Length: 406
Image (tube, rainbow, N blue to C red; front, side):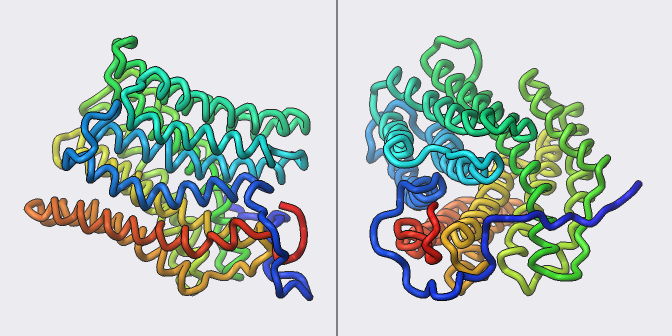
């Protein structure tokens, strides 16, 4: 097998602010780029929604349309995670295509659609919730497809398909809940998890080794073309297996194969050389939860552990960790700030990744402490994303330091 260093591609994130750009311009810049409103909404919602879920669990919110664990899963995927994905793809899509993605009133309308979806699932208006929550990823898919199509950027067309798949999964959850679809609502949740897992694996393979070699000179992160294809194909096979509702030894074997492939992939990026660069090590630490999730999923299919540990390794560890890592990096880069984590960023990383350790590993080691693990993990998660929302409010709402648009 041939291994090649991950190339450092040109990027729009300046490593240092331009000369003379010490004072940010005045005015509101919230609607100038997709990452601005959606990173802010996602981080605030990540902190608040866990409290709402606890209130539902305690019975303080009555009987809303989606309640209990299904609401919690739906909102973490189609609320929090999808908002980050859309914000990232709108921003990256502009760079990939050199064409405009939604800004201004159009971006504001998409953000309002997302907010409406978060509110409607707490009401008895089931059909309205179903339509609005499915409409958001479909509308975002159109917003991304237009610039990619104009630029004939075929390499990234599949991201449009992933947004459409998220819309279909969301609709499946609602139609199952309404009795219109003879499938369990949790199947739509599982497919959404698989779609997000595949998306993270694709983007992780593109940016983590590149950022590693750029941020840690001499690190030597490499990629193997054949391994990349096989590892991603294995995740697609897992998605198909979930669509077919496989369970038991066959699914366990597939999950463990995926875990092995992604462990090797991660090791080729030399994560042990990155500890001096927080903007880099956070991505490696977060990606490590992907093979761990896959291994735990295999173990759960064999009946060795509770499936909740496997699910939260993906949601809290991988999704939470990669989200906080990319939200700090892209927010800094696309607002003309130094690509260097400060103490607030590092605190966010430690809190979110700590939430994953507590939520996943404590119940495995000390089952009697499972409730304490849930409470402790929720507290760390809320603190991490709440700190991000407070710290990055001025960054995301003010113009770039270098005076450029975006």
